Amino acid sequence: MSSASFVHGPFAVLLSENEQTIYIKLTDTVNFMCFEDTLGPSDFPFNLSLHEYFVILQKCFEQSDDNFVVSLSASSIMADKRSHSVGSLKLKVNALVGGIVRVGFEIFVSERIWSNDGKLTVNFNRLEQKQDHDMKALTQKFDQLTHRCETLEAALETQREEFFRIIDRLDVLLFAPHHVSHENHFTFALPKISSDKIEINCGQFGASSHLRFQNLSIFYKLKQLKLLGFVSKSNLKDLSNDTLVELELNCGSNGTFTSLEGFTNFPSLTTLTVITAPGLANVVQTLKSAPHKIKTIKFQGCTGVNVVELQTYCQENKIFLALS
Image 1 (cartoon, rainbow, N blue to C red):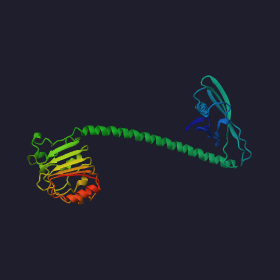
Image 2: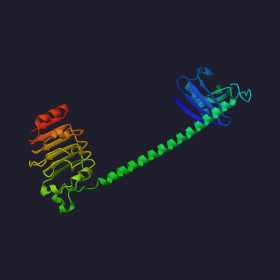
Image 3: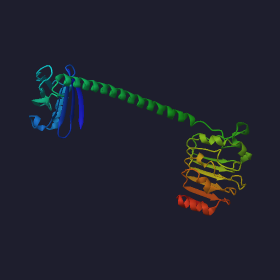
Image 4: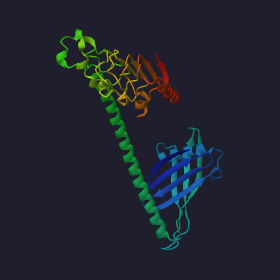
């Protein structure tokens, strides 16, 4: 189905078509008269398709070509001041089809009457025209706002891309400055903010107590994090990252790491590996405390874990479990 609207002299014209009919509505914006009708093949004199007639009418009302002309004449008859008979509007069409065949025909569009009270009909038509005008104004404002929003979105996306180009050149300091005397001492101290994989030896040069674990949250593309010598923290409360998928903790067998509390600081986490953490306990109780996306758990040398309880939990929640 297609439609089009035009202004033809004092008339506002609406045309639409479907496979079986053509709808036409002409509104006199001066005298507040309205003519509308649904036209079928029998309303036209020649053996042309309805779509061809629709195109002819459309070109006539566009008034962009002298080969397509339509003239209008009304035959509405006023009976008295309070009522009037149903009239019609004659459309006389003269068109040059395909630049070869000259076609001329007339069609009649009935006047729309709301009631026998002519004044009431005029008032209804006036209200409808005002509504149509207001609706067109609102539609125009909506289109302008939509265009403005699209322009702003494009500008924001450009600014976003530029912002990330800038921050991708930044380094993130993972140590307190006065503990980094030379970059070669801690090669992992200044990883790029756009890093997607980071491996940190927390015990290198006795550095674990000076690590800025809170800065891990800044890495906006981080997917894999491996912490070797993770011996200074008893849980995960001081660590966080929204994009991290795989976390590996090597806890050095000293028993300091005792709880998975704080694992919810990694909302995207799917794989958790913990190595040599004999003090780790209450794993199932902690995992049950909050929703999570963990689908793989690998524990090695975690002798304090209740194996049967963990196996049951993983089986019930379809989590792959590897214990050694």
